[in-house]
Length: 173
Ligand SMILES: Nc1nc2c(c(=O)[nH]1)N[C@H]1C(S)=C(S)[C@@H](COP(=O)(O)O)O[C@H]1N2
Ligand SMILES: [Mo]
Image (cartoon, rainbow, N blue to C red; front, side, top):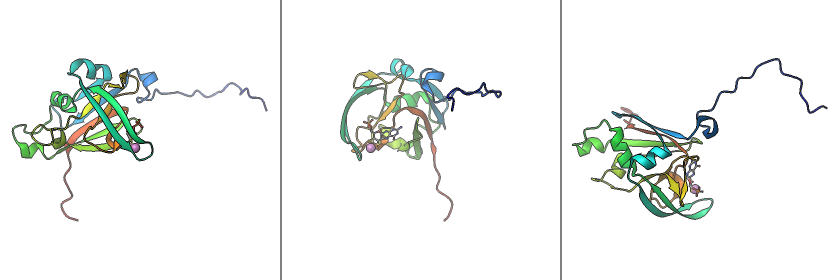
């Protein structure tokens, strides 16, 4: 059988995949939800618009064992502050109701509570990495860094979105 296929009479339209770094340029992450200023950011934005921190971390992976990495990037809290969470910032109880959902390019998703990063509560130095082991993440996309976690599951890579909001339990079972 010939490996050459006859010219196709139908036209196939190939749409660029918005998550495809090649066709869409540098990866962008969308910060949306209950915010006054939703943001669309590249890794270069994360590097140039906020002060960079460094975290030397070790986390355990169920399949690959212990992983040791050095990450650079801004505090997630600093980036979220610019997005302007729509809570009453003066009221700790209001802030404590909020959560963040972070999604990776493959759909892997995790949640954080706002209180984990809030300086009046957990004050965890959670980063949106712009480099891992001195290698820039511009093409791969930013990675969530949760230094206080023993396990690696929340180190979401190739972040495409962060949502901030509240989640109310159903009224009754
Ligand atoms: N997008 C995405 N990020 C992810 C995962 C995943 O499946 N998808 N796995 C997590 C898990 S289980 C671990 S242990 C770390 C592992 O990171 P590494 O294997 O790249 O060192 O990435 C985390 N980040
Ligand atoms: Mo893992």
